[in-house]
Image 1 (cartoon, rainbow, N blue to C red):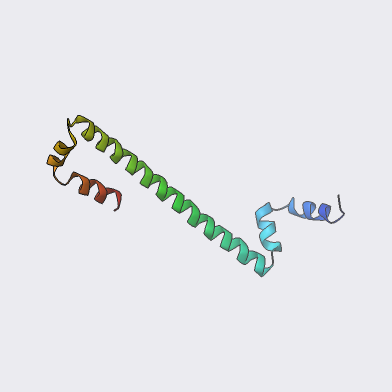
Image 2 (cartoon, helix red, strand yellow; image 1 turned 90 degrees about the vertical axis):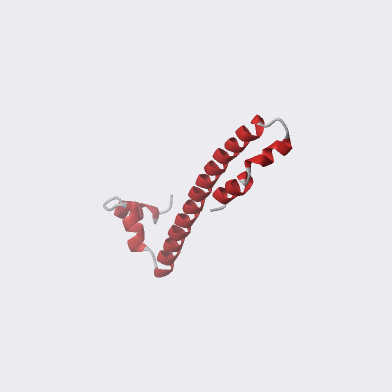
Amino acid sequence: MNAYYFPVVGAAANKAELVYIWEQATPEGKAIIILLLLFSILAWSVMTSKAIQMRRAKKLNQYFLGEFQTQKAVHQFNRLGCFFLTCQARVWR
């Protein structure tokens, strides 16, 4: 181990590590940390919204299959009216 490592660990032991790192960071380093935090929040919000969207699509798909399997022929499925449009409207809202 190099000699520089031990004083940094000793100084960081007294404070919380993240606070110590923030205090020691240069303005460029702080800007990078803030950008990484913002992009992390953005990425997690996209993943959450996609998970909600996929859950909704799965529920509508099960509803569609239930209705489709009760029909004896494909042309009878059309008698339900605008079923296709309402399902698509719910998914794409």
